[in-house]
Each structure stands twice: as structure tokens, then as C-alpha cells.
Amino acid sequence: RPTNYSIKNASRHKCKMIAGKIIPAIATTTASATGLVMIEMLKILQGKPLEAYKESSNNLGINTYQFSEPLPPSKAKEEEDVIMMETTVPVPDGFTKWDKTVIDKGELTVQEFLDAFKEKTGGVIWQLFHRLAIPSGPMIIGGARGDDAAALAKPLKDYCLELYGEHVISPGSTYIPLEVSAALDDEDETQIKVPQLVYKFA
Image (cartoon, rainbow, N blue to C red; front, top):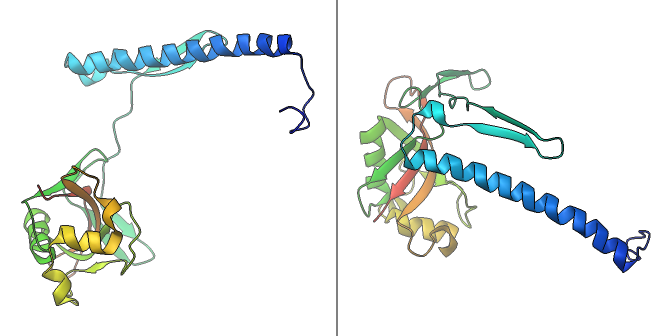
């Protein structure tokens, strides 16, 4: 193998010496990381307050261990888009990346889903697409414009499978992660942003 990569060859004994130094380093690093993670897991099980949790930065080579309190997640706030010259409002105000907008009403058609989203957030969906997959058909589902009546009448789950393929819903999965472009149903059609959208169909 060293010859293949133009690296100086070494004897079997020297290779064993090098490996002997690397293996303990890997083992101790893995053990320390695993132990620290388990300590935090135990805090969760014990219901400790948020202040009890710690993140750590460790260097086993120089034997230093630093612990600090994690920063709170940033909160969504109203933003001014200087390019589009419009305001984007968070719904709900101050949500974080840990929040989700869950639509949990069983099997819904695309139109029923749009209505359920409006009921929950007050927003009208203009674009609806899968969070993680690339579609084989149109990139978006036309929402409020109603430009495809046939699509709006289809079950949303089936329409996602049709657009993106069977792989987007894992066997046994009961939800689909989605993204939207939406606006409030007002005169200004104020743009809104919502936490990650989850459609639970079962």
C-alpha cells in the first residue's frame, strides 16, 4: 500500500508500533465523548433544569477539558427583505429551530391541507414542496392560485409520491416534512415564515 501512494515503506514491527499509538488515542477519545454524552442523557432522564446541561470542548492530548452552558436558540423575528422590498413576519412570533408546525388531521387532499394550514397559521400557501427531495415533475404545488384543480383534489400523500417517488416516505413512516412559501390573507399579502412544516397523515 505505501508503494501505491509513493510513501516510504516500513517494516511490520514499525507498523505495529504506529498502530499501537493510534489505537489507544482513538479508544480514549471515543470513550470520553461517549461518557460525556451519556452524562447529558442522564440529566434529561432526571428532568434537570436547562442550566444543568453543558457542552464541552476537550483536548486529550494536552489534558484540557472545558465546559460551558449552551446558548439559547435564536428566535425568528420580523425581517425586511431589501431585494424584494417586503416584510417577512414569523408565525408564531419568536419561534426557534426546535419548533414545528404540525398538521395532524389524517389523510387530506391538497386543498384540505391548504385550508388546514390557513386555519392554523392564518397564512395562504403559494408554494408547497417536499423539504428534502427533488421532484421528478413540477417543483411546486400551486396553492392559493388554484392553477391546477386536478392536483388540489388529490390526496397530498399520493401527490407527493407521484412527484417525488416512493423513497420520500419510509416504510412505517406517518409524516411528510414540507416547506412552504406563504402570505397572510390581508390587503398587503404580508409574507410569513413558519417553523418546519410536518404533515402527519396517520
